[in-house]
Length: 177
Image 1 (tube, helix red, strand yellow):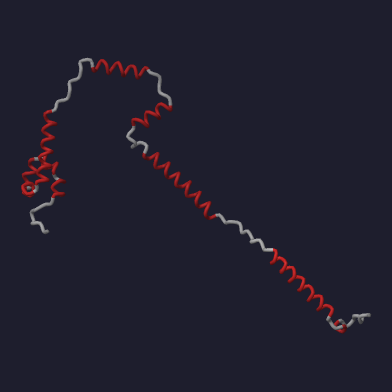
Image 2 (image 1 turned 120 degrees about the horizontal axis):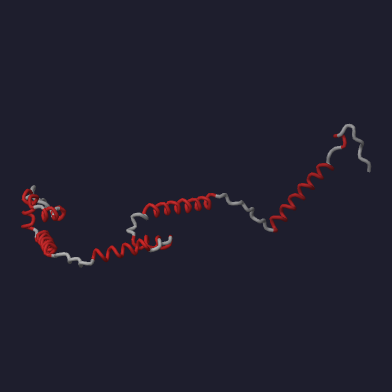
């Protein structure tokens, strides 16, 4: 659905509700908002609710202070100044209870970074360490075959030594029987 050139949508109107509510000159300089309010019941109702809320706030008055407020406040301040200083744990407890958390953000970010570095280092050391190579244990049948193979090689070498001709060594004596 196409909107006319001067028309605005509800999201843009709701973005400007505060200016329309508080600044009459802004509302007068922007007639497209008035046109939108005539055609949109939701935006008009929201503006009416905001005006009603501001009217209630304008009629509210703050309660009056008691005549002894200043005196009581000075007594409490003197008591706090005369009290012994709080210990480290008490100060930390009160800081944790009453702080907004903004002061703890850098400390928490640093702790998280340290935790990530330590955890990452542990993972790297655990993953990239070379594992010792354990040779697989050979079965008894394989061991027996190896022994027989070595024995067969030894027998072949012995046969070669015995089968050598006598004249191979020129200075050697003939074999005696």
